Length: 379
Image (cartoon, rainbow, N blue to C red; front, side, top):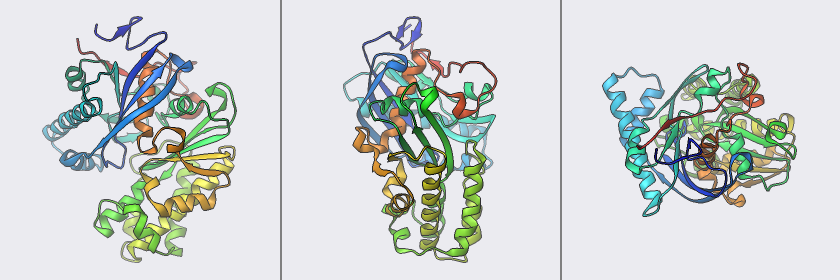
C-alpha cells in the first residue's frame, strides 16, 4: 500500500515527514492549507511550519453556509457541494506543493453540524488521495465523540508540539468562528500541563453583524467596530449569552452562533455600535477566562481571522494581564495555525497516538484515548 510504514499509513519511527494540513473554519471564509515538516514521531516529534496557501470557497461556500444554517437542501445539491469542496481542497494543495511532494495529507472537512454526540465534518477524501497519490486522513473528531467526548477542542496536542520550546505558562487564543483557548500551565507531559476549552462565539457574531447590517462579508480590520460606541443595553444582553456559553464548559457549535442577539438589536442600535459592543464583550470574556480558568498565562498568543480586527485585539489586550502577542512571533503564522495543527494531528494519527485529551474533551467511555481518523489510500 502506498505510503505505508510500520503497517500504518504515513507512520515512521523517525526521520522527516512533509505533511499537509487543511482547515476550513465555521466562519466559512476560505480554505487554509499548510505544509509542515515533522521530525521524529509521536509525542516526541517536532514540527516546523514551511509555508501556507489560503483560497476562497467561492460558490461552494455559499452552499455550505446554507447547509450549516439548517436550510432544507436536496441530497443532490449536498453531494455536489461535497464533491466540489473536495476538488477545491485538491487544487489548493497542488498550489501549495507546486512541483514538490508530501507524504501525508490531513483534512478537517467543513463542520456543518456540531451538537455532541452528533457532529458532521463534510468531506470526500478519495479525490484528494487519488489526485495526489498520498494517504489522506480525515474525520478526526468521531472517535472522541464515540468515547463520550465533545470532539473539541481538537488542537491542544498539536499546539503543545508546535510550541514545545516556549516556557510555560502560555496560551493560544484562537479567534475563529468560535473562540477557543489552549493553555500550557506546567512543564511536562501534555496530559498534566495542557488545558483547553471553547469559550464563546467570536467571528460568528462579528461576521453576522457585517453581513446583515453592514452588507459586507466582514468588518475589514475592525474599522466599523473601531468607529462605534458600546451600546450598554445590548452589552448586558450579549454578556449574559456569552457568560452562559463560557460557563457551560462544553464544545460550541450549531445553535451557539448568537444570531438571535443580532436579530434582537439590529433595529435598535447602529451596526458599528453592535460591532464594537460584541468586540468588548468577547475581549472581556477572554481576559477573565485566562485569569480564572487558564492559570493567568504570562504569554498569550493570538491566532485566527479575528486578529485582523483591531477593535477585538484592543479589547483583549485591555482585559488581559499577560503579554499579548501574535502567534506569528512563534514561527507559525496565526492565519495558518489551525491548518498547521491538522498537519501535526495527521502525523500523530499515522503514528497511532491518540490526538485528544480526556481532561479536555470529557471522554468517559474508555480508559485510554482511542486512535482517531479515517484513512483513504491511493492504491
